[in-house]
Amino acid sequence: MDSMDSPESAAYERRVAARFASFDQDGNGWIDREDFSTAAAALLAEFSTTARCDKGQALYGGAEALWQGLAGIADVDGDQRVTRQEFVGGALKRLRDRTTGFTEIARPFLHAAFAVADTSGAGTVSVFDAERALRALGVSPAVAGDVAARLDRDADGRITEAEAVAAFAAYFTTMP
Image 1: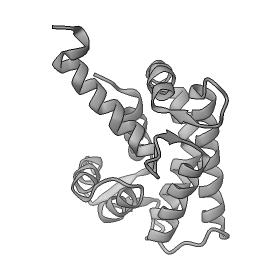
Image 2 (image 1 turned 180 degrees about the vertical axis):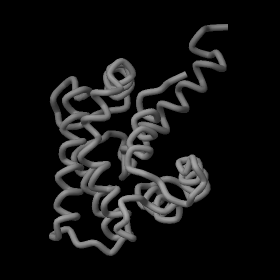
Image 3 (image 1 turned 90 degrees about the horizontal axis):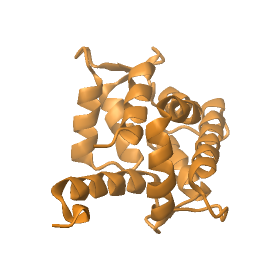
Image 4 (image 1 turned 60 degrees about the vertical axis):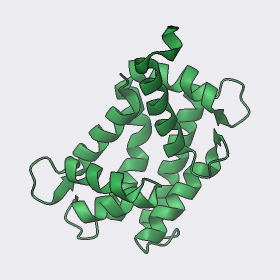
């Protein structure tokens, strides 16, 4: 049996595809700046937040920073699009080796997204609102509910920003 046909290889490919799809918001086969703008707009719409307010501006700025960071890591040919091949070949290999670097690239977007989803103003997000945010970003309802519940490690119904950032970074930088 060829190593590329192994169960481990198939599992790896499925995980890569899921990670790529989470960024490819419009499903066109590549990741570009518009995917990040789409994600920001969906999150703002879910939480009835305008793009022109401080939270909206911070979210769009964070989305741009995340796009620039990902493009800088993975857009090998400089065409302002990250194909699945570039994502697999560049992003995952580099991100796996630079978890801290990825966290820093993602932090402005995650911080702003967290602020949008913090409907209570308490500096934490409810499990319910975390699930809403995940669904707005294209995560299936069943998966979003499970992920939100697992983020609430102490089962108090609230998720801290540090927990959300750590989980996001682990998801994109940890491979089998």
